[in-house]
Length: 325
Image (cartoon, rainbow, N blue to C red; front, side, top):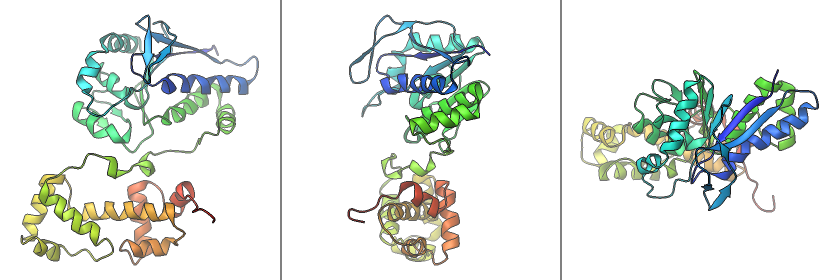
């Protein structure tokens, strides 16, 4: 087996860490493999002579060349950034991505690098993922793309997309596994202290950071539900609180948010449960009661549906002991 040719497409404003993260892990894998084993030929390439990454960091680049795998890093998304204008400024990179894809070789995006792939027309009628924070935006820009915000890595007919930042390591380990074998991938993960058993970005989602849909009516309903998380859900009583019929409540809430009040309540309860599991020593049963579920089994099933993990597994991954404990 010959060395795998990997090119990382650098461009103005990209994240330098996402340019070098995969190559660094591939370098580690080459050392783990030992002499005489096929490794990786990695180059940072660009259609431009000079590239400055996010944070005003200059990058050394080589001209675009043919590679087996082209990796497209993400870019800095500052508040108020015009994504359409940003992509328009990257016309040379979009053309390079499109030309590479035409060869039939693999193309990979890291984080919001998926927006460049979409601009190149590579995500139409494909499954894809990106950073959970921008998944809805990608879906709006690419209605023919099946966006899967819960997944870390998605490969569909030669096009791979990943979730945010650290998901580049999930992709890299899979690449190492396929090119160098399971032993090399596992050992590389251990040496680098990288988790090689992740399968979902759902446990990391913080809905408080997502754009909040809805108008004043739905916000008032949400506020009341949040103030009574542990109370039994009573649709009739909720509607009476706002002097509307249950039918009107459901219709207006759905029109403004795209979900039902019960859906919102369940998500809010899970969000509170996550906080308690992360920051307190309460038992899972106590947490279940605190967020309105007398049956820990029902709570655990709902929690797993929303986060991809059972409560005990979530606590094992995210619990931070308090000072002095």
